[in-house]
Length: 357
Image 1 (spheres, rainbow, N blue to C red):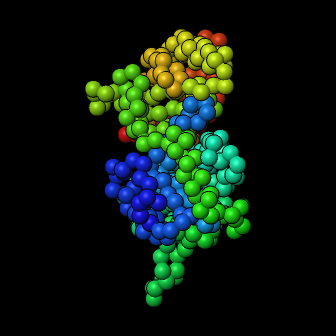
Image 2: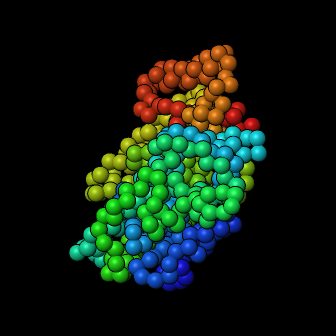
Image 3: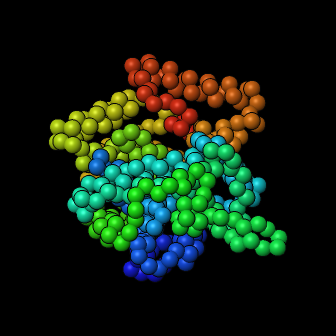
C-alpha cells in the first residue's frame, strides 16, 4: 500500500517500528477501500491522550494495531506478560488490554464526527503485532487471543505461519470473530477518512511539557487520570512522575472546576505525608489538558511491584517477602496517622527501586 491510502501522521524515529510498519504496508492491497494511518495521537472527551501505532481499514474489518518489537521469549497470562532476553527477565501488562481501551476510546471519538452522522462506524478491533523475527511466543489459551506474529510461507523446514496480514485481510487469527460486522466499501472508507480529519487526529506529541518536565511514556492509565514518566528539560538525569487529571473536556464548567478542586485537594493531602516509602509530591501545575501533580521519581527504571513479583516472586525467601509486607504496612500506618486513606492501593501502584539496579 502506498500514499495516499497509507498515511504516516508522524514519521517514526525508531528503526524497529519502521520495520514492523513496513511489513504490514507492503502486504496490504493498494486499492479501495483499504486505508491506513500510522503514528498519531488523539484526545478523548475527558482529556485523556492516547498514542496509536497503526489504524487499518480493510474489506474485512477496522483494526487498531499495537506494535511491539520484543525479542527473546514471551510467556504469561491475561494480566501480565514476562519476557526473557539476553539472560534478563522483564514483565509488562498484557498490551492487548491497553489496545482495547484505546480502540474503545477512538471508536467513541469517531462516532461523534459529522462525517459518520448517517453511517455506522465499522467495529474497531484491537490487535497486538509482535514483529521481531527472533521471537519465541509461548503465550497460550486466551492469552494468545488477538496476538499476531509475522506471516511466513511454508518451507521444507517449517510450516506456514498465518500472522498479522492474515488477520487484517482475512479475519484469520486467534480470538478474532470470523463474521464481519457490516459491509466495508469505498463509501465507508471515504466517510472514515473525513471523520479522522474532523476528529483532530494529530502527529504524536512525544515532547509534551508540564512545567520544566517533558512528558514521556505512559506508566499507568487510571480512571480520570494518566501517569507518565517525565524528564527535566535541562537535566538528563532528573525525572519525575506526572499524574495528569483528564478534565480538559469535562461535560460542563462546573464539572471541570469540581475535578480541579479534587486534584488540588489531593495535592494538599499528599504534601502532609512524609515517609521514605511514599513518593513525595513536588508541585502542582495547571495545564491545558487538566491539573497535574509532579512526584519525585528517583529511577526511571523502577519496577512496579506486580511486575517484579511476576518475574522474580518465586525467588523471594520468606524474610524478603515479610520485609516487603513490612514496608508497605509501615507506609499505610504512616498515612493513617495523618487521617489519609489510600484509595487505590495495590501492586500496580507500588514501586521496587531495588529491582531496577
